[in-house]
Image 1 (cartoon, rainbow, N blue to C red):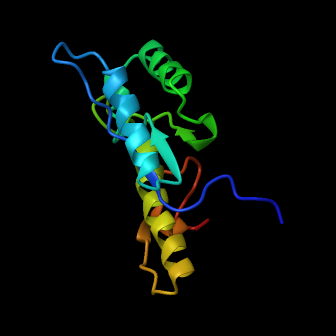
Image 2 (image 1 turned 60 degrees about the vertical axis):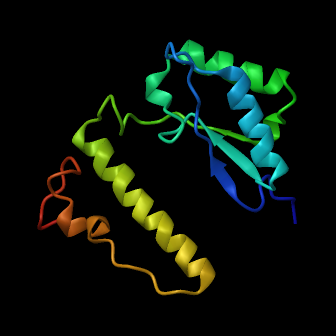
Image 3 (image 1 turned 30 degrees about the vertical axis):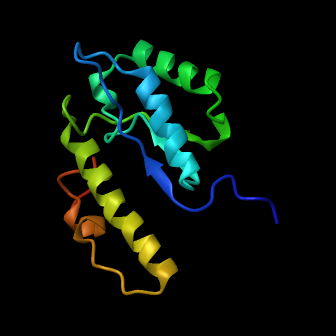
Amino acid sequence: MTAQPFHGVLVPVLTPFTASGEPDAARFTAFCRWLLDQGAGGLAIFGTTSEANSMSPGERMALLDYLVAAGIPAEKLIVSSDCGFGRQGCNRDIAFYKASSIAQGCNIVRRELGVPTTNVPATDPKLQIDVVPGRTAAAG
């Protein structure tokens, strides 16, 4: 059996900003280091929690480079690319799939823990006719 790349808690990391609205690389790195020191198994950066949509791609790359140069292990990072569910908004299809995948993901964890899952009506193909191109109620 191969080793798992991550273990324990994978933490979505908040991104601090300076008073002028720039990502604060030093505080971000210190926070990431603190989270790892507290036992986080990995760090999810640049997702919705990290305000990815508030930064340009260049700012995100610079922040990632800063983290790694400061000694944060790259193998502990989960680099996300938020779909735009936040400030930028997103189209209805992406919102639907993201929301239903979050609910399905919760059910995966529930099954692993041995607790009852919840019904996710959005995953019922008969209810997806307005979202899935080409699908009709009859095709269900």
